[in-house]
Image (cartoon, rainbow, N blue to C red; front, side):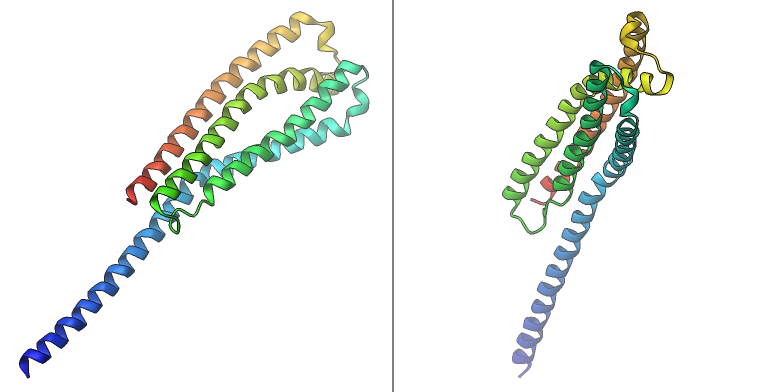
Length: 197
C-alpha cells in the first residue's frame, strides 16, 4: 500500500513540476516578447514625432505653393512635399513590421530568418533615407527660403551654397547618430531572439 501511495504521490508531483515548467517557459517567452517590442518603442516614438514634423512641413509648403513662382521653385516644393510624406511612411511601415514580428510563436529558425529579413529592410530604408534626405535638403531649402523670405536662393548661389553646406553637415551628423542607434537596437533585439534557442 505504501508503495502505491508513493508512486501516486511521485506521479502527481511530476505532473505539477511539468505544469510549473510550462508556466515558467510561457512567462519567460512573454517577457522576451515584451522586451523585444520595447526595444523598438523609443525609435518608433522618435520616428512618429519626426513624421508629424514632416507632414507639418509638407502641409506648410502645400498651402504656400502660390509663393513658388518659378518652375524650379515649384519643382523643389513638390519634391519636398513628396519626400516629407513618403519617407516617414516607409520608415514607420518597416518599423511596425519588425516590431510586430511574432518571435514567440515562430520556430527559432523562422523567427531569426524573419527578423533578419525585416532588419535588413529597415536598415536599407534608413541608408536610402540618409541619401534621400540630402536630395530633400536641396529641394526644401530653396522652397522654404522663398516662402518665408521671398528670396530665390538660386539667384544667390553663394548663399545657397553655404546654407546647403551647413545644413548638410548638420544632417550628416544627425544621420550617422541615428543610423548607429538603429544598428545598436536591431543588434540588441537580434540577441534576444538568439537567446531563445
